[in-house]
Image (cartoon, rainbow, N blue to C red):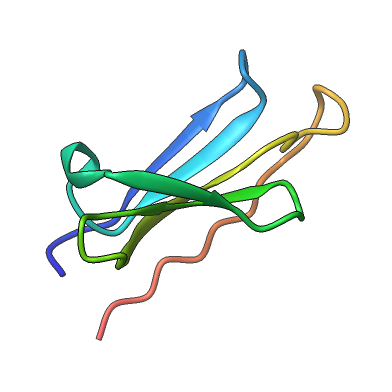
Length: 68
């Protein structure tokens, strides 16, 4: 894995996280918990989308990045 791409979209109130190239997306699967799994042709999860990310507009998102 080269890098993870994280997109916070305040307009659509979503969080997208990609573990692979977004252009490989072939199918999506809803989990029922406002999370959508994004999969490639081999049914491998390459990303996910969290719906309704913000309850209000004044939210801080703490992020910790770790490398090994």
